[in-house]
Image 1 (cartoon, rainbow, N blue to C red):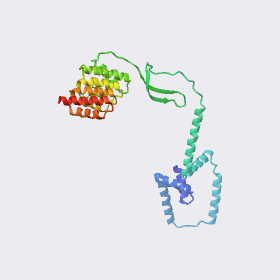
Image 2: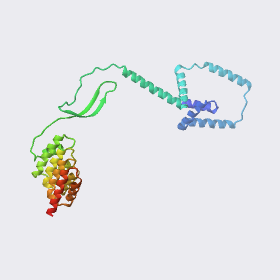
Image 3: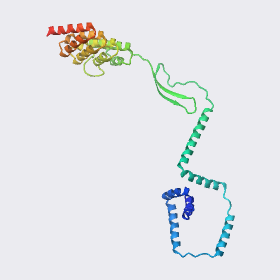
Image 4: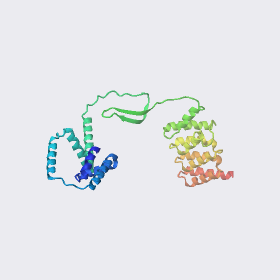
Length: 321
């Protein structure tokens, strides 16, 4: 509400002629506008001073002349233009909307639905763009690995798809090369093909049997540690068997290898792996941990041959003692 209209409403409110729907807006404006509050205070001060003066009743002739002059003055006022009436009606309508929140919410909802309907209508009846050729940025040989993003141009059939492409490559080198060994270690990943895992573990096992850079420790990038992981957790029995063969040389000097092979003997689902584990643990069958595992397997294993081989290994350990 503008100050000009507020000052007019102040006069009407002072004489009790302001409609109720404008009272709340007037109070809100007065709370925020210092100039209008001063106008209201000045009017109140004027009324207080006038109240101190004695009231003089005008003569009937003066009243009659004043009414006639007022009627003549009102007749001389030109009619308001269209824009003035439009502005007056608009502010009156805004006052009604502010005093009725439900009506304002309804009008906003109607406007939103109308705009949404118009937008959908324009999109549906827009002329279809001719399908152009598909353009590939940075094309290269290889399969698509994954899609990383999709962006659609608004109001069109144009779509941009971002993706990563896998380009096959190969490298040749000696088994002593750090790069080749790193690739072989990557080839033992469970996500790779089982045939690739068998070949990778087999070559790494050969390196361990030959004593080439197969040191101990818990280094996740070490060959011996990777063979331990493959022996215990790979889902392919052929991979586990190849890893076990590569660890045979270290069963007597590395407790981690001895304990891991004993664990494989007690829980590996493959009878071939358990059979190879018994033979590998032969040199250390006098160890208390190994004897305990052999004793358990000799009585509880489901395979008769494994039970017999474990029992014979225990008898051999007794003879050695």
